[in-house]
Image (cartoon, rainbow, N blue to C red; front, side, top):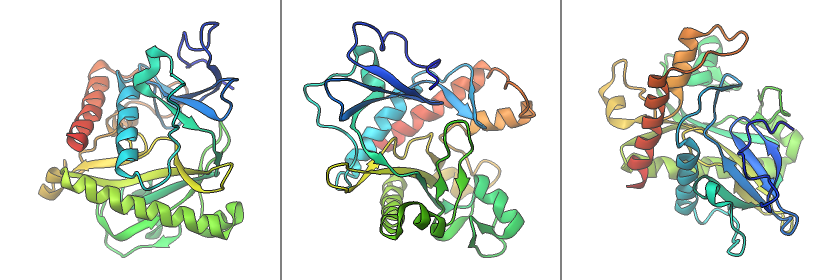
Length: 295
C-alpha cells in the first residue's frame, strides 16, 4: 500500500480513522468500532497517463465529492454506497471532500458506457471501425454521436497494472451471467437518465464509467465509488458542440491536462510539473460543470 499521498492529520492518534488504501486520487480509511463503514476521501491530486501529476488541482476533491453526492440524489432509486451514519463523523478537515460509505464486495469490472465516439474509442475506431469489439458504422468522426450508447467494460487491474478493455463475454466469465447482465443493464439505464438530465443543463454526457459492488448481507447490486464526475466522465458544452468547428469538444474535465502533457512530454520518465495557467484552467472547468449541472 502506498500512503505517500494521503492526507496529513487524519491517521494520527486523535483520529478514529486508519488509512487502509491510497490510490492515485482517492484515499480510504476505516475504523475499528464501525468495520462496515469506509471513509472515502477525494484528494486534489490529478492523474493522467497512469501518473500522478504535480501540482494538484485546488478544491478538486471537494468539487468531485459534491458532484457525486448530487448525482446519487438524482438517481436515488438506484441503491448506492452512501451510509446512513449519523453517529459517525468524518474528520472536520475532510468533511467537504469525503463520503462515509458502506463496505461492499466490489466487482472487478469498470462499467464504461459511450454515447459518443471520442478518446480511446476514437483511436480504436480508426484502426478497426469498432470499439471494444463492437462494430460501428463507417464514416464517423471524432466526437460523433453513436447510433445508440454502447457498453464497453474494462477489467480493473491490480494496483500498478493497466486496466484492460474486455468483452461482455469475458465479463460473464469474471462475475457470472446474471451479474454481468445486471451490470450492463444498470449502466446503460443510468447513462440514459443522466444524459437526459445533463442535456437540460446544456451539457452533453459523452461517456462515463461506473463501479458496482454487492451488498454483503443481501447481495443486491449497489452503485459505488464516484459517479458521473469530471474524473470518471467526459462532458461537453452542448452549445459549442452544436456550433461545430475545432472547439466543439470543449470538455469539463482534465482534458486540458492531457492535451498539455501530450504536447510537452514524451511519456517517458517523470512527467513535467503542470504550469499554473493549466492548473487554473482545469480548476475553472471543474467549477463550471458544477454550476451548470446543480444550479
